[in-house]
Length: 236
Image 1 (tube, rainbow, N blue to C red):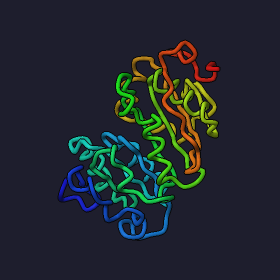
Image 2: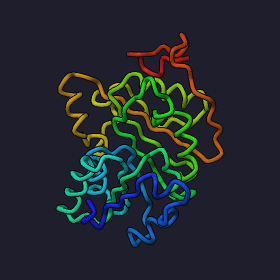
Image 3: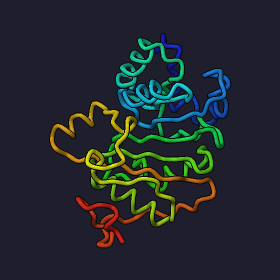
C-alpha cells in the first residue's frame, strides 16, 4: 500500500488533533485539476470507486476504508487501468471531517455499509454521520445509499423524511425499477452475493445541505418505524 502513489494512509493517531494537510485541497494538490470530488465511504474492495472513475473521467473519486487488505484490490485495479482520477484513503470514517473541507465534496456514495443495527453511532446514515457529512458536502450535495438491508433502507428513508430532506430517487427493488442505469448497474463483490441469493437491492438518493437541521435518532424499534421488509414509502 505504501508504494502506491494514489493511496493515502492516515490512521487516527496521526490526525486526531489536526486536520489533514489535503483538507480543502484534494482536487488542486492531489489530483492536480479543478474537477469535482466524489467520495465512497466504506468502499471495501474499491470496485465501485474504480468503476465510477472509469465511467466519469471528468470527476475525481476517493474511496475511503480502514482495511488495507480490502483497499489493496481497488488500488491495484486503478493502477492497472492507469486511472488518474482515483485515490484511496485509508483511515477511520469517524474522523472524516478532518480530511475534507467545507463544500469540497459533491457526492457521497454508501455502498452496502454494515447496517449496525445495535450500534447507532457507527451507522453511516445516522444523525451523527449526516451531521458530519454536511460539513464538507456542497449545498445540494447528494448522498447515495445502495443496500441489501431492509433495516438500513427503512431507517435512512424515515430519517430523511423526518428532516424534510429532498429525496431524489428511492426504490426497494433497484433491479426491477426504472431507475436502473449504467452507474447503478455497477456491482460490488457483496452485491453479487446478495443478488445470487435473490435478495432485492434498495437504493435511496437524497440531498443534504449545510443548513439542514438533522433531528435526533429515530427509534427504529417504535411501532411507527417498525418497517423491516417494508418499503420506506409505507412509513408515515
